[in-house]
Every structure is written in structure tokens, then in C-alpha cells.
Amino acid sequence: MENRPLEYDYTVAKMFMLMTVLLGIVGMTVGVILAWELAFPGVNTLLGQGAAEYTNFSRLRPLHTDSVIFGFTLSGIWATWYYVGQRVLKVSMAESKFLMILGKTHFWLYLVGVAAVVVSLLMGITTSKEYAEFEWPIDIAIVIVWVLWGMSIFGLIGIRREKSLYISVWYYIATFLGIAMLYLFNNMEIPTYFASGGIGAWWHSVSAYAGTNDALVQWWYGHNAVAFGFTVPIVAMIYYFLPKESGQAVFSYKLSLLSFWGLMFVYLWAGGHHLLFSTVPDWMQTMGSVFSIILILPSWGSAINMLLTMKGEWQQVASSPLIKFMVLASTFYMFSTLEGPIQAIKSVNAIAHFTDWIVGHVHDGVLGWVAFMIMAALFHMAPRVFKREIYSKSLMNTQFWIQTLGVVLYFTSMWIAGITQGMMWRAHDEFGNLAYSFIDTVTVLHPYYTIRAVGGTLYLLGMFLFAWNMYKTMTAGRRVEENELQNASPMAA
Ligand code: HEM
Ligand code: HEM
Image (cartoon, rainbow, N blue to C red; front, side, top):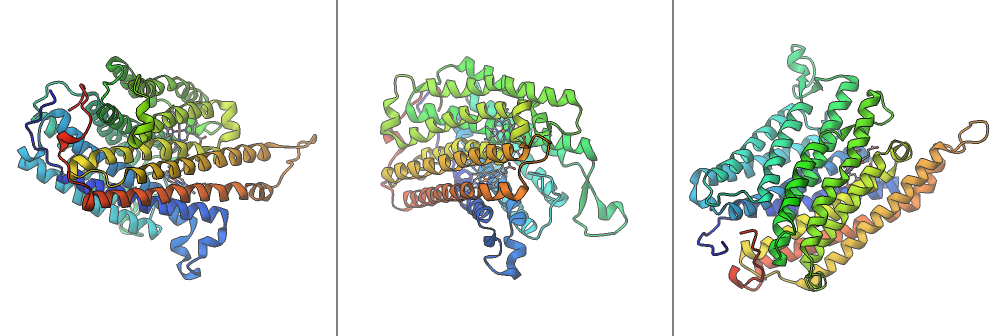
């Protein structure tokens, strides 16, 4: 199974690898600026009042979220797909001219979309729906890009030599189908210019849904963007890269299938946890809470499966920086998928909602799990794609520790800030008068915001080390053939 007569074509994978690194740096730099703005509001106008329109928090926040989600994470998903897909399906993209053209068109059109997103968000053009800020022309471009990816997935599957579909392929397919459905429904919008016979800007639109319905669809989308953007494709990666890198077979293939179907079924009902104590019907809120708690099972099913894959081989955590990244990623996955269900319990959410504890939850998930796994995947791919050894393993280790410290500072400060905030907002005296004014909470939070900004800056520093190591690997790494690289998993090609 392991003898590899094929020369895989990594042209498109390389293009997306470059975008992953680039957009990771852009998105996280903006995140760091935001963190300093929250700690020191003067940073909003650091470039002067004239530029404040482009540098203030409200303009930059969607630029951060969208560039890390639709830029860094999505590019990472695609970079790995164009690598993993060929290998587990035992077919080279070079075998089909059509698939090569498709892949490259996918990349270039995506690049155009990214440019349009950056420009429009900086200009303040937004639908104002979180994670769905793009106006309809960009939405259409996104749909086309998505269809191109789908054609590439199913095209490759269509000409595969390997009959059975490795579990990662299932997860990639689910990512494709899940996001397609969510994106289409949540972005149903009416272009006002055309609907009104020419009033206003041509790109402007309003949502096709109103009020509570709009909120429901939005959070059905919002949390499933977490499911199909931050969970399913990242699990796809770890199921391929951890066995490959460690040389161990996946602990239990059955468990991987069980948690796959568990995730598919349960995630779709959990979005209501974003709307607790809102105007959506009470039973929907309860359903959101209940399904969120059940969600621990399939989430931990995957994470435990990953950790048990390392059974008997734990010494690799000490010896291999890459295994360290992946084991820490699984651990953070367990961590955030325990924290999320706790926050979804109504009485806990009463304290947590609108506070920085939610931001802490988001970032222990995205920094500890998503970004760590994407970087680990790229580290594994680089020597095979560029045929050069990783330039510096000690730099990898340094990066690992700097970024781990960064995540820990980020989420611990946000936990303390969030719970303090939540408690202060609801504190009252014996007559029912609020004990604190809003500004009291702002003052108390200041040190924690500064600690988060320091943590974020450390994480970004790690990103620069990552980019430097990748660049040096490409240009100065020792030349190496794939068969010289240690690892051979019985499960994956
Ligand atoms: C079992 C799995 C999970 C459950 C049940 C869960 C639950 C929750 C809850 C209750 C909230 C807060 C809603 C609010 O009061 O505003 C939340 C927010 C969020 N979670 Fe999770 N979470 C889970 C896993 C994850 C993971 C693994 C990530 C990322 C890698 C993540 C990313 C987010 C994001 C981005 C938000 C913020 C959304 C927003 O308000 O903009 N979650 N989650
Ligand atoms: C250097 C690393 C990063 C820093 C310093 C950072 C900082 C921030 C800040 C300051 C906010 C705004 C919080 C607020 O409104 O109160 C934010 C929001 C957010 N960031 Fe990051 N971020 C980083 C990396 C990432 C990455 C890698 C991702 C995803 C892959 C991500 C996803 C998000 C999301 C989804 C939100 C919205 C959270 C919510 O609405 O609750 N961030 N980030």
C-alpha cells in the first residue's frame, strides 16, 4: 500500500500554503492591533485622526475575523486538501489537465475574492452579520470558488485508484457540503438597488429574513461555521497527519466513524446556545443547550482517538516538535469542547454571554486547536512538497513554546476578565440597585486586556518564526527525498 509509483503534483497545494502563511500573519497582526486598541484606546487613532476611519476597532474587527477564518483557516484547509486528497486517493492531479486547471482557477479566483473582501471591509462595506459580512457580489464569487473546490474534490474521487475513502476524505466532503448549505441559506439577501429601482449603492443588500428569524438563521450558520470551518476539516487534518508523522495507526477506525456521524448529527442543533435569553422560542434555546452538552461525546471521541493513537509512543512528544504541536492541538480541542458545553448551560451563560469569557473560549479553540493543527500540517507537508528538510527544528521548538505561552496568557486573562465582568454586571445591593456602573468594569478589565495583548503579540511572534522557518526550508533546507523521511503509517498513503 505504501509503495508510491505516482509523482503527486503539489502546485496548487503550494499556492495555498503560501496564502495560509501570508493571511495568517495579516489576520493575526490585525488581531494584535485590536487587542492593543482594547487595552489602550489611543491606538485607534495612532495613525492620526485622518486615518482613524481605517484603523478603528469597528473597521478592523471584521477584517480580523474574516481574514483568519476565510483567509488563514480556509487556505490551510485547501492547502492540506490538495496534498492529502491525492495521496489517500492514490491519484495525481497531473493525471488530469482539467483538474489542474480547476485547481489553479480555484486559487486565483479565491485571491480576487480575498482582495475584494479586504478592500470592502476597510471601506466599511458590510452586511453587519457576524462572519457573513460580505455583500452580495462577493457572496456570488464565494459560491463560485466553493463550487470549484467541490468539483476538484469529486473530480479527484472520480478518478481515484484507492477504492475505500480514508476517513479524512469524509471530513473534507462534509466540510464542503456543510458550508455550502449554511452559506447559501444565511446569505439570502435582497439587493436594495435593484429592488428599489435604483436607490442607494448597487452593492448594498438587506437580509431576506427579519428579526428573530434572521437571528436564528444567523446563529445556525454562526456556530456551524465553527463546526464545518474550525472542527470538521481540522479533524480531517489530524486524522491524516498524526498517524503519518508518528508512524502509528489511528487508534480506532470505528470510533472515528462514530464521532464523524455524531458530529454531523449533533452540531446542527446546537446553534441556539448563542441566543439564550433572547426572543427565540424557549424550547429552541433549551434544545441548543441540550445538544451542546451532548456534543461533548463526538468531540471527545475524536480527540481521545487522536491521543490514544500515540499510545506507547509518548516519547515522541518530547523528541519531535511536530508531534508536540499535534498533541497540544488535540488537548486544546478537548479543552474548548468541554468549555463550550459548560458555557451553553443556561445559568452559566447568564454570566458568560456578552463577556470576554466567550472571547477566551473562541481563542483557546482557534489558537490552541485550529492554528496549531494547521501549522503542524504545513510543517509535515513542507519537506515532502519542497523536497527539503525543515530548516530548523530548534526554531520549531522555540515557536511552540512562545505560542503556547501566548495562548495561555490569552485565555486565562479572558477567563478572569469575563467572569469578573459577568459578576460585576449583575451585582446589586439589598434594594436591587446595581452595585457597579459600566465604567467600573472597564477599569477593572484594563490589566487583563493588557495581558491578552501581550499573549497575542507572543503568538504573532511565533507566526513570524513559522514564516521564517518555512521560507528558509524552501530556500536553504537540506535537500531530501521523501523515502528518507521517517514515518510510514499503515493507514494513510
Ligand atoms: C462542543 C463544542 C462546543 C460547544 C458546545 C460550544 C459552545 C459555545 C457557546 C455556548 C458559546 C457562547 C455563545 C454566547 O453566549 O455568546 C460559544 C461561542 C463561540 N465558540 Fe464555541 N463551543 C464549542 C466548541 C468550539 C470550538 C472547538 C471553537 C473553535 C475552534 C468554538 C468557537 C466559538 C466561537 C467563534 C464563538 C463565538 C461566536 C460569537 O459570539 O461570535 N467553539 N461556543
Ligand atoms: C495573534 C493572535 C490573535 C489575537 C491577538 C486576536 C485578537 C482578537 C481580538 C482582540 C478580538 C476582538 C474581541 C472583542 O471583540 O472583544 C478577536 C476576535 C475574534 N478572533 Fe481573534 N485574535 C487572534 C487570532 C485569531 C485566530 C487565529 C482566529 C481564528 C482562526 C481568531 C478568531 C477570532 C474570532 C472568531 C473572533 C470573534 C470572537 C467573538 O465574537 O466572540 N482570532 N480576536
